[in-house]
Image (cartoon, rainbow, N blue to C red; front, side, top):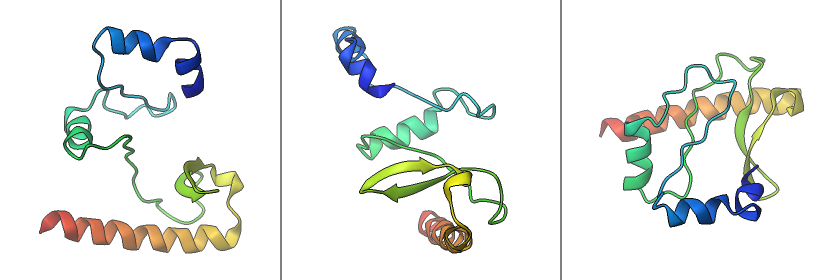
Length: 107
């Protein structure tokens, strides 16, 4: 989808019209806050090229995808693609990272 935005001229058209930021989300996320001003503002403030929101899995076998670094590229890995060992390890690593981020934002 993103490559076609470039190849079909949509990015150039948006640039011509003065569009600076685009909010994209998964269609299966009914709880997404469209153009969330806090999240978009945070990304702009941090000069991020891209931003993503996530919550920790409730348990290792929860049927949801995860953000991961695969082949040197950040991707969403579907739950069906994660083997049992990685499910358990990534669950506890993610909990630890969320704990550290929570402490960071409290300070």
